[in-house]
Image 1 (cartoon, rainbow, N blue to C red):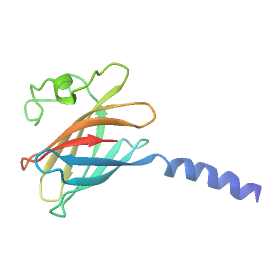
Image 2: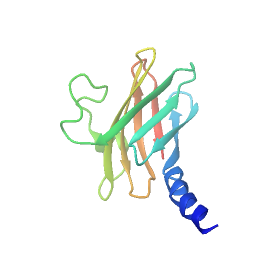
Image 3: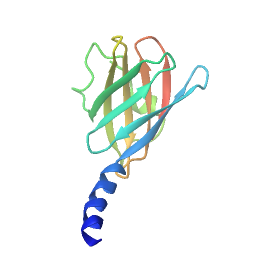
Length: 130
């Protein structure tokens, strides 16, 4: 029994590293639920059209967002609408099978909770809650 507990404990810790993430449509309040994997630094969400978007995130730096980005030239503090100190800041780029792109900027606490803004290449915008 002790051996099975030693195996189950690390597996449960890995499973606990995947959290739900909500995307709330700015235009109409549509809510989408995705997943956020802290260890792998990945995010996935399925759009109302059925297209699944997946991608990784990285720390947000001035080099993270280039001219081709949906957020190029944006004021991150203004977009996130809250003080940004004391949090890790990230940038994610998710892609789908139909070449649709979702980009997201966010502030994340070490316990995995946070907030952000997402834009889809087809024009939708979302508030994001971790």
